[in-house]
Length: 269
Image 1: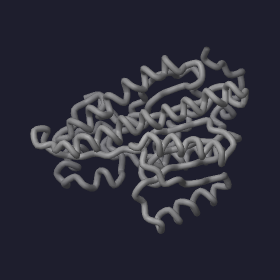
Image 2 (image 1 turned 90 degrees about the vertical axis):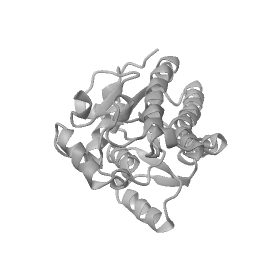
Image 3 (image 1 turned 180 degrees about the vertical axis):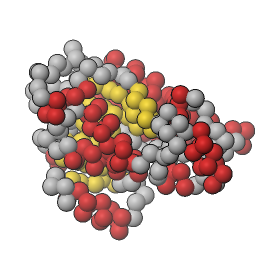
Image 4 (image 1 turned 120 degrees about the horizontal axis):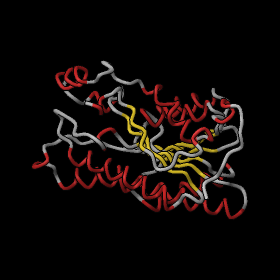
């Protein structure tokens, strides 16, 4: 049964005070913005990272310490089911509980479909789809255990998908990436129904966000996107914070299995 919240002042519904959130791929880009937003809403925060340097991680740790919440970073490759499962279990041990999980880690490879290598295809699918599933699966088992113990009513899972789940990006060629994100959205909807008794599952699908992922594209591509985005600009990562907090909080208590597209109108044309 879906948890029903009591009538409360609206701002209190967005509070995550006393909760613990885990964001995979949380050391940069969208994942970092999501983690900061959750922390600003009062949640203690854990993140995973895979390739970030020690120097960069020192900066990240300092940032979260300045927010006055408990924070810990775990080096973990989400494509390894054993690693992410053990990571989730360790977060519960270290923080005492787990309430929110954001499977966010992802990669994009841009190649013509006929030239896509097997390694690049498998890497795209293993990170974007398999890794997200393994993360959600580990979270679900943690949520179920806590609910059985009486320490959790309902966990929240917020996938980071992509506007590419709904449209065909152009002129860049990235068919496997688009397929992985479309599969992720369908996975989200299936899990939302299957796990509704102990978790609310939803997805956020960002459009063109100002991250390192965009910088790899040639200027003519970026100029073209700007010309067709109705909003006429790229989204800054901090503009996504509110969406993650909304879906992680009681403010979205009756939102189940939905895909929230944040693309400045790009998916509408």
